[in-house]
Amino acid sequence: MPNTQSHKNESKSKARTTVMVVLLSVGALILVAGGIYLVTRPVDDIETAYGCRRSGGATTSVNGTAVLCEMFEQSGHRVYSRSTLTPKLRKRADCIVWFPDNFDMPSNKTRQWLEEWLSEWPGRTLIYIGRDFDAAAHYWKTIKPTAPKDQRIEIQSRLTEQRRDLDGRRTSVKQPQECDWFTYENKLKYRKVRTLEGDAEWCADIDASKLEIELNGRMKPGAGARVVLGSQGDMLVSRQPIGDGQLIVVANGSFLLNLPLVNHEHRRLAGRLIDQIGPPNQSVVFLESRWRDPPISSSEFPGGGQSGFAILGIWPTNWILLQAAVVGIIFCFWKVPIFGTPRSARRETMSDFGRHVDAMGELLALSGDEAFAHARLRQYKQAMRGEDRG
Image 1: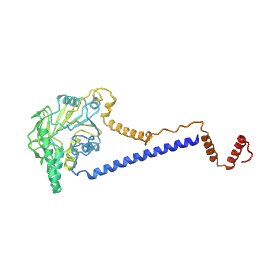
Image 2: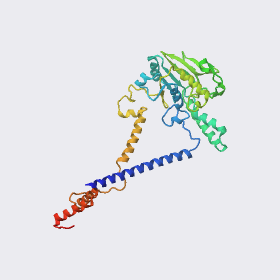
Image 3: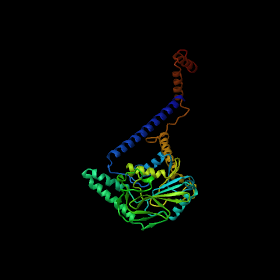
Image 4: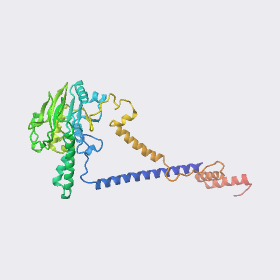
C-alpha cells in the first residue's frame, strides 16, 4: 500500500540520519580529543622507535629512517620496507639498507643469506649501519642549554636515563664482536668527530667542524674491506666487495637517522652514501628488525604457509586492508544498527479495511481532481447504500 511504503521510507531515512549524526559526532569527538592531546601533551614527549620507517611512530621518531628514505626517493629510487628476508626480496632488491636495533653482530645464517644475495646479481649493495648511537640522548643534550630553568632538571634526568640504557645494552654483549664484515670494540671512549679523512668523493666540500657525528665504541673494517671515510684513524664508513656486489658498513647512525639529518653537512654525507648504490631507479629495501636478526623465510608469507592472515604482516597490504576494514565498519554502522530499545513491529494484516480506505483517499488526493473524487464517492454510495445524492 502507498501509505505503508511511505512509512517505511520515512523510517529508513530517519534511521540513516540518526546513524550519520552519531558517526559525525564520534568523529568530532575524536578530532577534539586529538587536538586536546596535541595541545596539552608535554613538549618533551618524543618518539624513539629505532631503525623503522613507518610503524609505531617511526615517521616522527628521532631514531627513525623516514628522512633517509625520502632522500633515496628524491634521488629517483623506489623504496620499500620489509621485516623478513623472503624469496621476492632476494630476487628484486637492488639495495638493502639495514639499521639493526641490536648490538650483537649479525648471525652466520643472516650474513650467509645476504652475501649470497649480493653475489647472485652484479651491482647490488648492502648498507649496514651499526647500532652504536641513539638520537634520543642527542636530543636531550641539544635542547638542555636553551630549555627553561624549571625544565633542565627533568631534561638532565631523561638524558642520564637514555645514556644509562644505551650503555647498558652496549656493555651487555660479549666483547669484542668479530665477523668477516667488521670487528666491534666497546672501548666506551666517547668523542665527537671534528675531522674527516678518506676518499675525495666522500670528504670533498664537507665542513667537518659542523659535524655532530659521535663515536662510542669503535668499528674496524673486516678482511678485504677498505675505509673510505674515517676520522683520526677511526672508521666511519668502509667498503668491501662481495661477489659482483658491495658491502658498505657505517659505524653508526649519527649522521643518517631522522634527527641527525637536520644537520646540513650530515645530509650531504647521506647524499654521498646514496650515490654509492649506482644510477636512479634502483629498488631499495629498508630492512627493519627489532632486537634480533630479521627472520628468513622460504615463502613470501612468513611462517612458510600460505595463510590468508600472513598477508596482514606485509606492507603495504596490511595498511590497505586496515583502511578497508575501517571503511567496512563505518558502512555497517550506517546500514545495519537500530538505536534505542528494541520494539516489536506492528503487525500489518490485509483484513484491516481502514487501510484500504486510507490508501483510496491518498490515491484520490494525488489525482488533484476534486470533482472526480466526489463522483467516485457518489458512485460508492449509490452502489453500496442505494443513495442518489451525495
